[in-house]
Amino acid sequence: MSNIEKDLTEQTPTKEEKKKVVALSKREDIIRIENLNFYYNKGKKQALFNINMNIKENSITTFIGPSGCGKSTLLRSINRMNDLVDGAVVDGDIFIYDQNVYDNGVDVAKLRTEVGMVFQKANPFPLSIWENVAYGPKTQGVKNVNVLNQIVQDSLTKAALWDEVKDILNSPALGLSGGQQQRLCIARAVAMHPKILLMDEPTSALDPIATLKVEELILELKKEYTIVMVTHSLTQATRISDMTGYFLDGSLIEYGRTKKIFTSPKDPRTEDYISGRYG
Ligand SMILES: Nc1ncnc2c1ncn2[C@@H]1O[C@H](COP(=O)(O)OP(=O)(O)O)[C@@H](O)[C@H]1O
Ligand SMILES: [Mg+2]
Image (tube, rainbow, N blue to C red; front, side, top):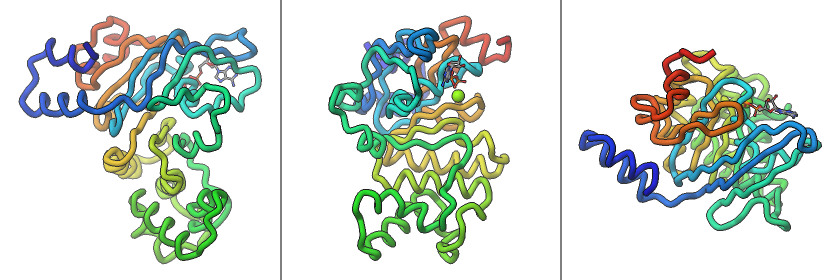
């Protein structure tokens, strides 16, 4: 029985809730993390301990837990961003559909286009708004300006930024507000036609209004993409995610439907964390 089905038998959900849970349980697993251990410093520092986790398509999953518990490490393992860290060692498997991303011969550049990433601090290139979005497709060989224009418009529209920037596409991206820059980074990822978007505390540098805008955008993006995000905001996790994983000291303590995790967690450690008794 899957986590989701277990929830259904354990709770007596409202009709609305039940519909949501059934819809989620019917979706396919897009990411499967199996027995994943992760070490920094050539094995001297273990950061993740035997993580197992399945993630459904077109869902939003949040990773929560105290600072240093391995959330970013796990997120970066999904598109092999950790390969860039000297001395990092991975043991275990991550599948995206049937492809093991750690198989020899996997095209890591292609993997990172399929699994896009958005960081805590918006990091646009010091180029124009247009160039930021067109950059990726250009490196993939798209040269036709009309095609690039269309990609730029579509991506900015999906990132809920088009109306604000359509008249200033040639202006420097670094002149945008923080919230706009973050949505631009989302547009840049979207321009590569990813299947999955990883976001590491994407709103932690934003004010409350910009945060709500990005949250609305993430909810909208779920129709087309699968989103996995780290957040330190528990209210954000409850507002937007379908599934939540609680991490502590490199272990996945509890993983299930967000509603369940926040209303009736099984593990006392989860309970302590969500009720603010941690630390
Ligand atoms: N590049 C690195 N080299 C060595 N240790 C690291 C590196 N990045 C993270 N760590 C360590 O791995 C653990 C998990 O870190 P991280 O995944 O960043 O946690 P979180 O995102 O939950 O705050 C921490 O103890 C952290 O100090
Ligand atoms: Mg982190």
